[in-house]
Amino acid sequence: MVLEFLDQYSFDILGNTIGLGLVATSLVFLLAGFTIASISKSVFTKKFASKLPEHTSKNIGKLLYYGIILLSFAGVMTSTGIDLSGLLVAGGIFGVVIGFATQSVVSNLISGIFLMIEKPLKHGDTIEIPDMDVLGTVLDITMFSTMVRKFDGTTMRIPNDKVFTSRIRGFSSTNARRTSVSVGISYSANTKKAISKLKQTLNEKMPYILAKPEPEIHVTELADSSVNLQVMVWHHRDHWGKVYPELCEVVKTTLDENGIEIPFPQRVVEIHNKN
Image 1 (spheres, helix red, strand yellow):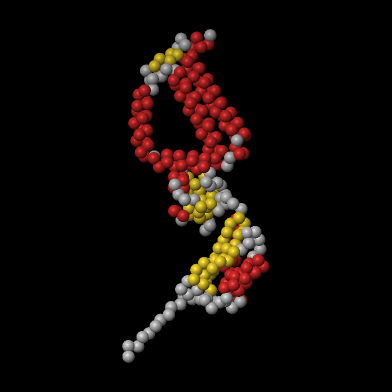
Image 2 (cartoon, one colour):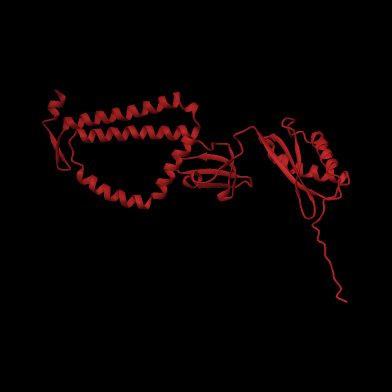
């Protein structure tokens, strides 16, 4: 009865005569759409958010909420019989113009979605992006950009399309990492003695390194001025900042204490007397 009464009154929208009853019905459907969107977002947050990274769950929740509202609005406009062809044409032209102006924004958005699906990095990961000379810890991944805190304390905002198309080296995907130091000893030094002393000192004075896999030391090159050794140790990924400088110091001290020379570059110069 109420809708029949309201339908006696009408008004014009974009050249279409619409009864007040239909308008009231449309408002009810829109309200229902907002309600369903809120409930869907709430259910998603309770059921699935804990299984996803925080930034990913927030972004998916927003897409779900606004997507349902947009579908509700489109359904209501269609049911009222409003002719939107003129608006669609104008919107299409406007969309093309906006598309060219915001193609980088769209590219970042799509790249952000793929980063959340593929998950090559996540919050808290230590990463390196060689193409952009970036080394640091991931602070956040949004729909458009990735925030990284570098080891010098500064933060860097990187567009997602740059991150997605770059080589990413991750340091947090495994618990153990290997650190290596190269050092050259003189040709007159006993190579076996140098390797033995280094292994002994590493096991005694470096608590951060792992017993399994054990440290490895190999001759890697017979260079112009030295016999080059590669010292490799395994350690927990969180100790990288401590292990590398300490390893350099231990290698240098061990060689010094055992009288093993680290030679300077050498050249042999021959002088020929024409007389």
